[in-house]
Length: 496
Image (cartoon, rainbow, N blue to C red; front, top):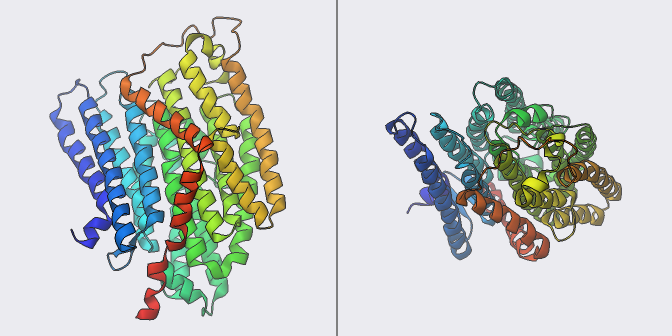
């Protein structure tokens, strides 16, 4: 197999599977279940993860792989995110296989769009050329724009999709303008040559402005404040499984790009961009947690929670290179497990119609759905950061890295915000385990949890628990991936 094909093997598997889903969808008669297409998509996501694991064996034996004129780099860092994205897509598809209450004719589109979105996300994590990152960003964004409005015929779904598209296009323009400016300052748009060019650039102000523009573009993708205004409305209108996907996998891809760009592409400007990171982190934590305090809609509450967690993750960037990458990767994995799990529980409880929305609707839920209530409570405790959950060690590594690097005040702000977050998480948890004073939960449908959904819920719960009990295995993995992020590309310009 050629190096170019090997470098894009997971993406090729997902692309071929998505095309097969699109080709086979019209063959199924109208009114018939599209579930076979879902099983095909699940198989494709599983094979994609196996392809990423195969890449890891090759990299361990031969070293970092570069392809397509060194614009794509396969190393343990990119493979980690490939595996994470494939896992998120797999559990999302398993959890949403029976999500559609009736044979909806456009259900096949859902499975194809999820796969195509994952292609763009994986492409972003392995690209060391900013123009290639832009292509991956667009592939991912177009799919999620459509998925956000997938509940056709509902006003909130249309608003969700349109708002996400308009603001997303605006943010993409910032990113592309930042790429143009970094080219003007360094003469290149590749991560390695950018680092070399910054050492001799005659326009450092332009380079600083370029970094700020790129941060704005990626800040939108991770829903960091003040670029978060789309998040509550989009989360409220999009289907619950889609929200679980778009709140984790695209963020993971964007943070992977940000880690490469800041630590490997612009280390010369560390003193400038670290200030911007601190501002974004504090704004995200404070606005996210304070905004969540006033929410009664559970999906909007989790949307503001997502903004706050983006701030926690940005705190990791204040550590040293190795600590920052290790902390950010670990936190991304733990947040993916617990947040996808929480939204899968919501999808099982409310179904496609999503009649259960407000905190009041969850009052006394434990009396009717004790299993689902326990799972949701466990994920909420992990989001708080209670010990023996992945969320605890995620915050521990992030805040300890900031403290070790002298950012004590930022750690204090983060811990204070974690205390504030306890209020709204526990408010939902208290409602679930409160005895209802009326028939407020009488209309909650008792849906049977199918085997695929049970597997997805069990996988996310076990991952959240495992990362809280045995975090060292994942920490050692991401620490090993850190030193080789862009080494192969960084030395190439001097050889030419």
